Length: 173
Image (tube, rainbow, N blue to C red):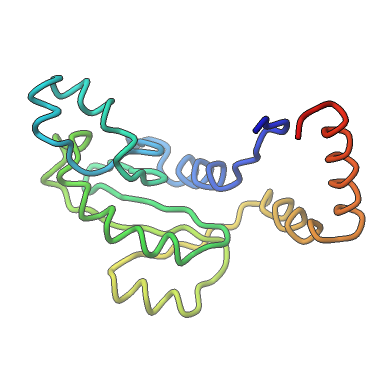
């Protein structure tokens, strides 16, 4: 399949903006792999190469923030809040065994979900799993919601259909 349009990654921007606003002076690792690397890989390749080679098999958090007092494992979810809530307890558990956090292994780990809408049922779940929920609403988020709302309008469907026809005509099917 040939991709003809750069995908807009709104959640990466969302997480990045949040971190830059609230943790500008702290160490941040974006899309950070978590969990240990098998000992046989480390023995055979050395830690550095093993960490790089094993990366596709490790889950990634949106951001890990290292402050003077704690490590914050962060997920940003604009829409699918449940996905972030489900991942965070696992991510928090994996931080201490992750080679990237070896020197911070004695710091407490806090799980944070950043979302633009005031949580409802999510509050109860977050409390149960000791996850802090932060409501963050940057101004540019209005553009995201407008795009989401316009996606199924007749005008947008027609525009996508025309684009699809042009691409098929050029052999990009």
